[in-house]
Length: 166
Image (cartoon, rainbow, N blue to C red; front, side, top):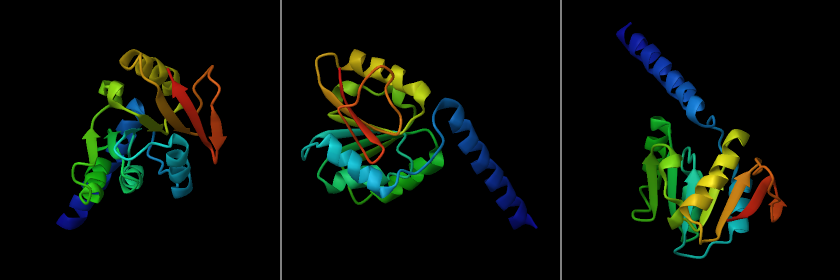
């Protein structure tokens, strides 16, 4: 009975963490491998450049980026997903960093490319943040499914849109 009680409490805790994260960001929906590869292809970053992933989930895209020789930094609000991503990224020391926190505190001046799979409500604010943080840099943005309002994507392929900011 004690084990069942502990399992029930753990499941309730996990449920509330996932629901809590939705209040501040997007729900966890894994990006399919085809879209991850398309995003990395469209971003066309060179070895050693830095990719930011906003809402990095289980770290799959970060690992794909590291396998291409990129430095990858992901932000994730869900502590369970952060632990999973860090565990999966352990084979890439110094190349992948997973931050438990809100990406709105990130400094985009250090990014060469950004992958985002966020809700519509975040996209205009994200554009403004990137322009503020890196007014003199061109940063490539790959967005899975969601558009930046009022901006025309440079390319669209496999539900991934490519933008260049500012």
